[in-house]
Length: 157
Image (cartoon, rainbow, N blue to C red):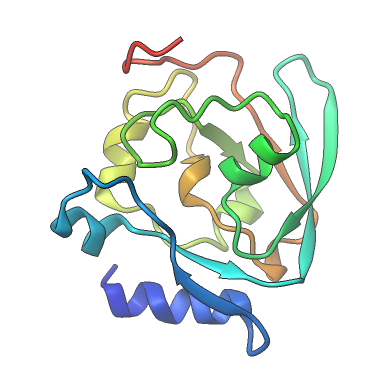
């Protein structure tokens, strides 16, 4: 996806009332990665409902701001998604499993995301990285299942 396509997608997610900008990245991020992998975040007062299904089967329904990533939403609500790389798409610890209907509404994953997903345990056809799935109004009521286990190859505990 080109930078322009990402901007257009973010504008659609925010709607006319929202403001959007590139999410901040760590200082060490290269310029080329910025151009390819930087998610745009929408800053909107609008929120949607997201239901997380935890590995033990328990469910947590939370309000998520349109434009926030699933990783951000989970961490904001103390749902146990690690995100060892800080959302830099450099690990698979924010691996989530989506319902088929939700997965089909999203843009195709980037090659970098697919490479990271190859490292995930319990990979499914509807697996995505939580740092790369952004809340949109059309996803209101989505169900996000957390895998039974994750692999942290970064070595952080």
